[in-house]
Length: 203
Image (cartoon, rainbow, N blue to C red; front, side):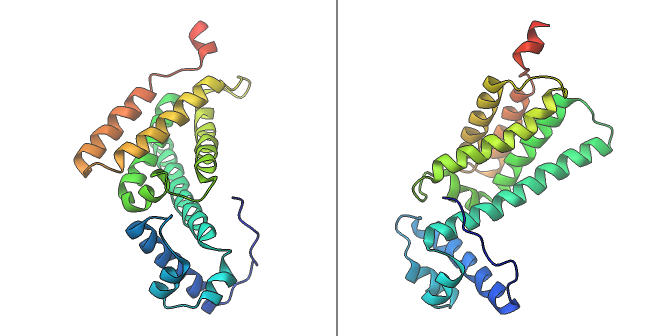
């Protein structure tokens, strides 16, 4: 599932074609699902050729992963901005910062509900579920780091609990209406603030 390297320099026309193919793929995947989608449908919606698709991507799985990478980048920007804003307002409590980051992630999923559903529905390329869990665990690890000081060990159990909770939380919030989704996001991230590394609980 690793993306192959792409040329760093892309012509404006090539960039526009690539963008159109990604937009078309998102539309088709949302409509019929990844498994039932075909390359021919994507290029038809994009107004492109099959050759142009294979110039930019290796196939529909590559399109799917590219959409996820763009979504994940937006999510990272959202969470980083939320933490920066909180710190600029004087927030320094690590547990609160973790809560803010997790809340921003869930709000991003609600804001892009249709897109998030693509990746958390279980209808993806072979191996994507593992990649999704791995990426969410990496994201969680960076945020769980807010819990600990530089010389403190990583609490692997805490990392698993938080990343697993976020995975289930996203799957739930994206299938609810806005009011219910926001309520659930608030409640889940509120519960996460009560978690602490086990070694700190023993102190």
